[in-house]
Image (cartoon, rainbow, N blue to C red; front, side, top):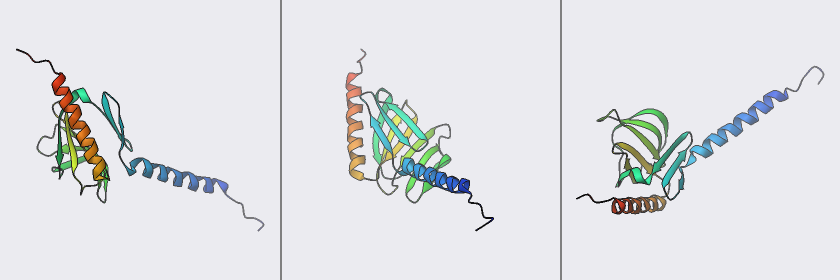
Length: 148
């Protein structure tokens, strides 16, 4: 054993690399959603969006995503996350937070033209957020002043 050095630096590098990979998997694993009275916040890995309910224009449930071109993001199995461009309206950036492409997705339009697609691994949770957003949209429409 004489002459062999133990390179503990390589062991530390391997452990740190494994921990970083595990952390990246955990933060991209699912959509982390926080609901406050005035806004919805979505975090999925490096992607973060805040959606004030006052800016919400429409909410719909769709089965498929339209034809999109990825600017940056990733796809793995049935997961799509990132920023995309619409092939028909290339000026609009679309945020996509889809945990399962096979399940229905919530299509959100806010500020008249910004789109977001969102779903979860569990269709019951997707439906719960869809109903919640519909209620918020209906409440916002009721609160708008009517002009004569």
